[in-house]
Amino acid sequence: MKILNDYQCAKGHTEEYFVDRDVMSVTCRHCGNEATRLIATPRISLDGCSGDFPTASDAWVRRRESRIKWEQKQNG
Image (cartoon, one colour):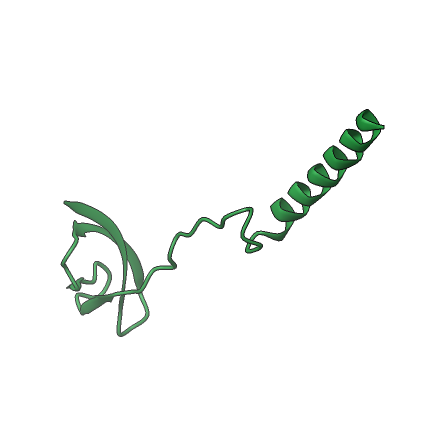
C-alpha cells in the first residue's frame, strides 16, 4: 500500500513522495542526495465529554443545566 510521506535531504530540500509504507529513504529530486522520512504530526480526535475538548464539554454542561431548570419548572 502506498502512502504520502515527507522526506528531507541533508541540504534541507523537503518534498512529498508517494511511496510504500516501509520506505525510510529516497533520492532527493533536487540534489540527488539521500532524503530521509520526516515524522508526521499525528491526527487525533478529541472526545467532547472527557474534558479534553473544553468547548464541547462546556456546551454539554449548559444544555444539562437548562434541561434541569426546565424539568424543575414542569414539576412544580
